[in-house]
Length: 182
Image (cartoon, rainbow, N blue to C red; front, side, top):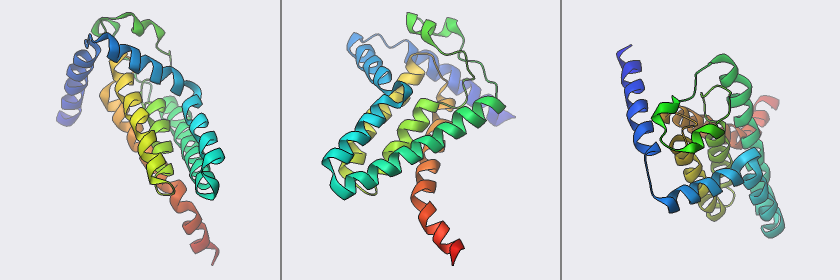
C-alpha cells in the first residue's frame, strides 16, 4: 500500500507541475500533435506514407505498426478502461481550459500513448529511421496527455508499457505461430 500511496503522490505532483507549463509554443505544439493523433489519424497517415515510399520494408513496417496499434487499443480501451474505472485528474489541478475537452471514459490506461508507442516500436525493427521519426510525436503525445489533464503520469506509463508489449507480441507472433505449428 505504501507503493500505491507513493505513486498517487507522484501522479499528483507531476500532473500539477506539467499542467502549469505556460509556454504558448509548447501548448500549440502539443495540441497539434494530439489532434493529429486523435482517432489514430497520425499513425494511419504514417503507415500510408511507409507503404507508398518504403517498398517491401515500408509495407512490412506499416502492417506491423497498425497491428500493434490495434492490439494496444483493444487492451487499453476494451479491457483496462472497462475493468479499472479510474477518474481523470481533478479539474482544480489543471489551470487551463483544455481540461474541458477531456473524455468521460476511465483514465487508466492512456490509449493515445499505447497506440503511439505500439506503432513506433513495431515499425522500428523493419525500418529503424521511420521508427525514430515516429518516436518523436509518440513522445509528444505522452507528454500532452498529462499536460492537458487527460491522464495521470501513471496512466501514460501503463499505456506506454501496453504499447511496447503489443509491439513485441506483433513482432514475435509469426515466430510463435511457426513454433506451435511445427
